[in-house]
Length: 157
Image (tube, rainbow, N blue to C red; front, top):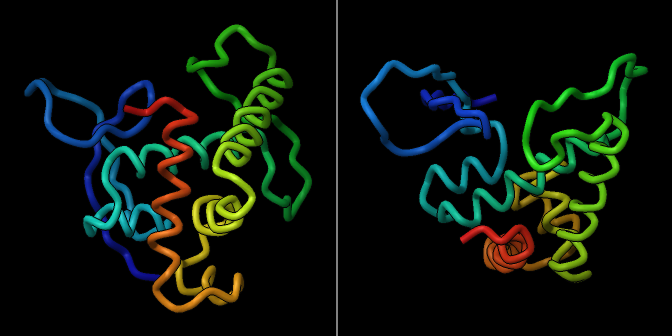
């Protein structure tokens, strides 16, 4: 697997892009090649709004614990702060599932397939195009349309 490491600042909401005040901050080294949308964003194929929409969708997917388990999970995902503050772990999981379902529903049935494959399952665009029996190089345009609708759902400006 290719490694493309970048240093990103940590905030309460997650990694932050861009520059801010020049005081000492916590940071993390991230492999931007780990997900297809990170790869597309790093190379200028997705703007910040679409990238943030994809990250929010994947975050809700992970918080709802929708990915298949290889082994038994003994402890729930712990999330501190955010839109679900004050909820029990089960309520946070249900709220994330509701947001995820709402975002996919807002994208529409024709676009939710590519969203799930690329953003949640981390399939590459060529693999998603092949699985969906789409023409080569059509996935990027469709993914952008889908992420635009998801950004509208999450009210990302």
